[in-house]
Structures are given as C-alpha cells and as structure tokens.
Image (cartoon, rainbow, N blue to C red; front, side, top):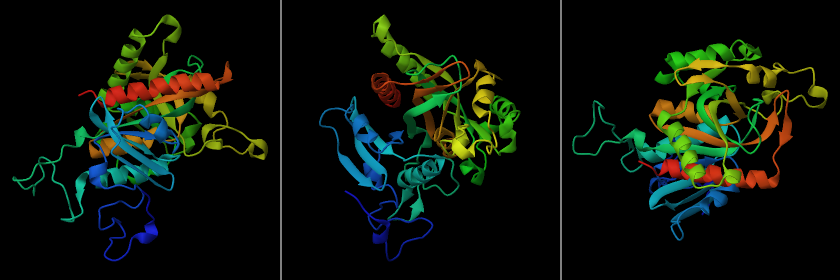
Length: 340
C-alpha cells in the first residue's frame, strides 16, 4: 500500500491532515495498523531486516510512502510495528507527531482520546494510558569515546540534542532534574556552548530493559560470541559532516566546533547512575527521547557502533561485524519491547 499527500482533499484540516480513512499525511497506516510497541529504524531497507525477526506468518500489515516503510506483526505473540523514519531529528519530529495522532486522535469523532485525569474525560470511555506506547530506535552510530570499539552496542541513557528540532517544544519535566542539568551544563562548557543544545533522558525502564536483554543474550553465548555494550550519553546531530565535527575539503577551517569529537570524548558526567561518558554520536535519539517524554511515552535507543573516531583509535566496522552486532541489536530491542 502507498498513498500521496496529493490525494488528501476535501474537508482536511491543514494542521492535522488525515484522510477520511484516518491515514496520516506521511505514515501510510491507520491507528489499527500501528502497534503500541514500535521499533524505529532510519534506513527504509532495514524495516524488512527487522521484520524477518518477527514471528513466522505474523505480519498483518505492510505499506510504504516516501522513505517511510512500515511492517506490523508480532514477536513472541506481542504486536510490534517496525517503522522507518529516514535520517535526522526533523524526520523523528514528523514520526512522533503522527504516532501521537494515530494513537490518541479519533478521526470519526474528531477529538483527542481522554487520558486519566482529564477534566472533560467521559467516565464511560476507557482512558488512554500513554505509558503503554514504547519506542526503541535501532540504528548505527559513531563514537568519540576511546574505550568503545566498533561492533559494540551503544545504549542511550541520556540524550544530548545538538540539533534545534526540539527548541520548538517546551522542555519535558525530566529535563529539569539535577541529572539532566548536569549533563547539559557539562556539554555547554565545550564549543557546543555556541549552539543552543539541550539534554534529556531515555525512559529508565527501556534503558534497563536493553541492558537486561544484552545480559540474557550473552548468557547464552560462548566467550567469543559475547556482545559488548556501553551505556551512557548519546549526542544527536542535525547533519553527518560538520555537525559531527567532520572537516571535509574546503569546509576545513569553517566549522563552529572543529574539535567536537575530542571535546565530547573528554566529557564526564556525575549523575545518579554514577560516572557516565558520551558513548555515541548519531542523528535521531535526542528528539525521540525528548518528544516521548513530553507525551508520556517510553523511548530509548540501541545503536551499533560502526565508526571509532577518538584521538587514539580510528576504525570502521567490517560488514561481518556490522551484521552480527545489528542482529544482536534487533534482538535485544524486540526482547525489551515485548517484556511487560
């Protein structure tokens, strides 16, 4: 199935574009096709890769529109949707809004579903529990941390937004906690102080679930097959090159933060979980965690480290390393999503 925004006509709200069937403008599905447990991948081709891990014969829906592919099936009998976002926090902002619409807006009644505690909630209707929506990004990343090797998994505990996407939204409550403020204050001591960065936190239950799933995975593997992983802060950039400290050609000498990789690699945060470091740099997790926190959804991320960019180690994964680690990342994400 596919659709085009050009097919939206008639009585359509331009600020909340939905087809008469309840299909959102970018995600080619209705609410009944979107599970509460969702895996985000950046690469549209990776949707089928993740879909292969779902229960045999369980796929009930599959569609594509632009760079957004979607498959819904089940894992261990639990409904799961796999959704591609494309690259960047700007795309995550679109996806989070449309997940929110599909989960909480009734297109027939043209109103938002009530949550527990809403002043005008209908006592005869079941209220919506936002915490049941769980999202995990599975992707790839680089690392500025000399301890983190290629082929490892980076699990997000804190998310640092080097983009400006979430500057258009008020900060969620978790951003005012001492831990998040510690992360933000330390980041602002770097050259990122010239940029309006923000910080937030992944859902603790998702982070711990990913750690537990890695532990369980390793308990079944022999010594040579152990999957190494690191938990810490994820930095999300709005681009791949200068935005992540890569100086290319004639852009060299024109970067706002030319030593970004080294600065991020040196950071250390004293938070309630203990001493933490930046474990990876990518392009999506900050907006995923920030907007999920605003909505009361539970979100986190697990990424395969494909590039080691620290002072002391420059390396890139082999295809074999990537395939093995990505398989493990998919497994631990699915295991985490489907545990109550």
